[in-house]
Amino acid sequence: MKLEIPKPLVEEHEALHAELKRATGLPGATGEAARAVAKLMHPHFEKEEAYALPPLGLLAALARGEESPGMREVLPLTDRLESDLPAMLAEHRAIVAALGRLAEAARAERHDEVVEFVRELKLHAQAEEAVAYPAALLVGEYVKRVLRA
Image (cartoon, rainbow, N blue to C red; front, side, top):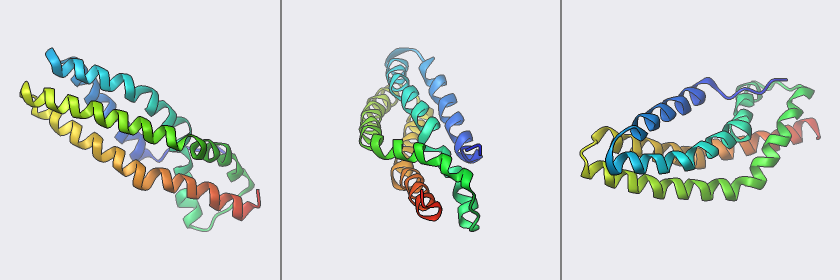
């Protein structure tokens, strides 16, 4: 069974990457701060795309009551997310701190679009912490119970 990240989440990550890339090309303190954010975000997004977000691809099927032995493939991902969750949350805190520095530089240099991007990225991190990560963990727990893994 191929686990796929739901398309809206893929597109959101792509849009955030694109906005950050634009910001890294800016001159001055804003570009420098954006590059610092990118350095933190890139490995974090890779982890999310490898094991934190793919379990969400099962949500719709599970909500419809669909079950298959192939769903067992999600368990290594959700187990890894569970064990790595403290580190993932620490990475979010580091990213949010770097975003604060980016917003400060962007305000000073009048890059309003970057200030808005910072707001969007902070909201994205909050949504992951409040919804995506817990939902992915619940997928794993549900699959374990249903398939008696």
